[in-house]
Image (cartoon, rainbow, N blue to C red):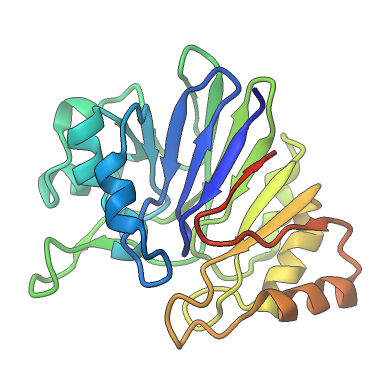
Length: 247
């Protein structure tokens, strides 16, 4: 079996490795565009890792609930991990030094099948216990470069604006798949996202973080047009919410 990628809407994904290991990235499943979110969370099992780019609720999502059910270990930068444990109640024995790091560091996980490097993102990062509680600082936001043995190298941008040093993210890895935010307002819109893709040069580009709320106005159609304008050489793959593809 090859690598399987499922999109849950916003920036949330499930990845199944060739050996059958499973990990989640920014798992906000109970979002407005995924009507089966509650069912999916209830059915979650055999999740090995939960990877988080930053602490905002539309990325942390149901991480704690899923972790308590499955025993999934937290992969995040050390400051975000501390906030997840102290504020949101992520099980501390599932957020140890074997799976947390920081920008520039690379972790080797799941018996060497997965490597994760934390890379910069231009955004913010706070966690909140609930909507009535004040935000708590959760360190710096990150992107994630995830290399899968016998599978693709995936760059999840997290939430970010465009910055020229994105070009250096591909220095040490050929990026097979770039999961890129395009919604605008809080992150890059189609114009700047296309510029980012041109710098990274991924083989395949999958847009996310659009259409979940009215203010996220960027669309895949606009993004496709902008990729053509800047001459980005990539395969654009637009996923449906809930869809699983082989990559």
